[in-house]
Amino acid sequence: MECEVFTPLLEQFMVTPLVTWVKTFGQSFGKGGNKLSEYIDLVDGICLNEIMLQINPKASVQRTNKNVNNDSTLRIQNLKILIGQIKSYYQETLQQLIMMPLPNILVLGKTPLCEQSLEEMKKLLLLLLGCAVQCEQKEEYIEKIQGLDFDTKAAIASHIQEVTHNQEKVLDLQWLEAGSLAPEDLDSLSRSMAFHLKRLVDERDEQLETIVELTQERDCGQLSAPAPSAQSPNDSPSMHRTESRQHLSVELADAKAKIRRLRQELEEKSEQLMDCRQELENLEVELKRIQQENMQLLSDARSARAYRDELDALREKAIRVDKLESEVGRYKERLHDIEFYKARVEELKEDNQVLLETKTMLEDQLEKGALKAKHAWRD
Image (cartoon, rainbow, N blue to C red; front, side, top):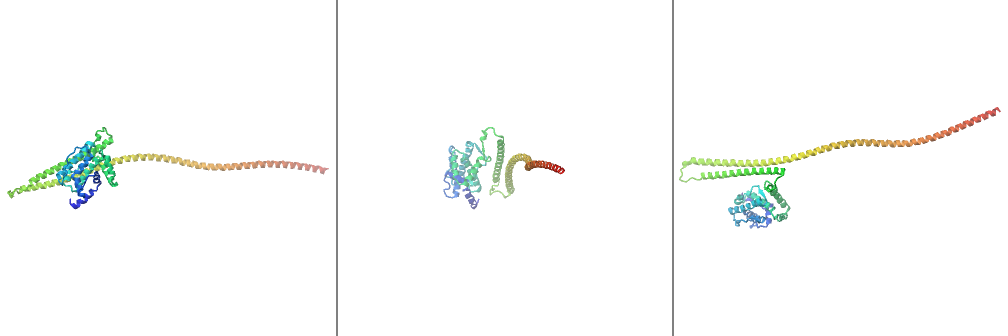
């Protein structure tokens, strides 16, 4: 990679949360005072081995090369020791198995100044973070993380979640001692193991293909070695066969590269299919739950309609009761009027009786007066 392309990537990498976290251990990075010297100190593996020794002081101390001086062999030896310490700590102390591809120490050792090396270093720091937050001194290291700024803490928390709870990266082996598992846990574990087994088989096949390609390239290199100067120019058929073999080797390499790409695409599609199946199962569970809620809501709606009909009937009865009450009130008022008229009638009856008695008395008096007048006339 060209320097003007790699330098911005390197500067971005050296301010990532993982690198910021590593600096909290207080190791002296970058004696030259720039990002490149800090990165070289990381790639050399000296400081990282010292950090791993702080995390796991009970580990057997292996001698690392203190003066690498850009020697790829010494750098690879240091990184090999570091990877061995990390694997041992995960398996023996944490009872976990690293399922993610291990950092490629050959790339880090031979070509550290490339984009792929940055990715490999990220893997290495991620595994180192998983050791730190699960070791006996994890409270101390977590407290240092808490002292960082908010964005860095959030990113580191995401990395911790990735390396401690993602079964595709680190597989917890404690379930082997736990005895029987729940059916849902066993199903999830079986799917995870099948996925890991498929990936390991693909990696095995890929490594075998790489070995075959390297063997063919070596054989082709031996066959295409320059002929001695005393050889006759009449050996052109042999040279044609060599060129043909080289051409076939190139075509074979291209075909195998295509196969690897197709396998990678197939693996990605398989992962997407598994994710879709899991999402489909979750949607089916959610659908069943919604259907049950819908049935309950329908039952509640029927009950509500029945109650509403009863309420309407009661409202009509209440309206009729109000009407009847108003009529009863009117009848009560009329009843008072009847009592009044009845009293008046009684009074009129009494007055009529008096008048009748007066009439009778007057008639008697008239009759008496008439008799008196008659007698007087006779006389």
